Amino acid sequence: MLIQKPTYGQTHQEFKWEIPKNYNIGVDVCDKWADGSSRLALIQEKSPTDISRYTFDQLKQYSNQFARVLQKAGVGKGDRVAAHEYPRQIHFVRELPMTTTGKIIRRELRQQYF
Image (cartoon, rainbow, N blue to C red; front, side, top):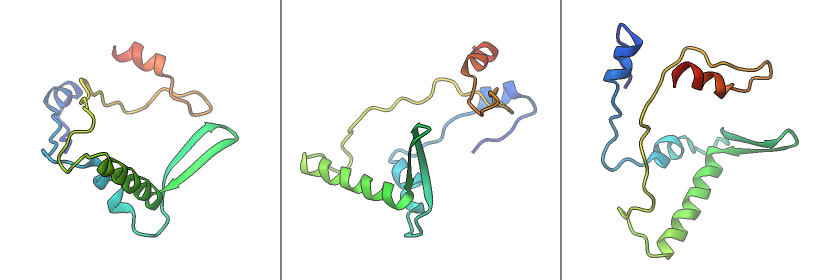
């Protein structure tokens, strides 16, 4: 949990991820929301005319399908499938620089913070 300190610098310096040893992000951010309500989870926009929408129920279904593929390949509970790196630095900002169309201007973010 983020506890705001008197200054940004202090907040940034004292922030620490507290992730349980056996944390499953798929369950936390997807499965617990997959309740049969067809609630929208993700919009993928490849181009202005190629837009896909996915519900939490669909994502859980795809995740379960992939889990079955891994099981058939011999991957068991607790086996590491891929290494994951934690972010080295995290910067909290009040506003993101954006174009008039809503795209984030990453160049300006880099100039401000890096």
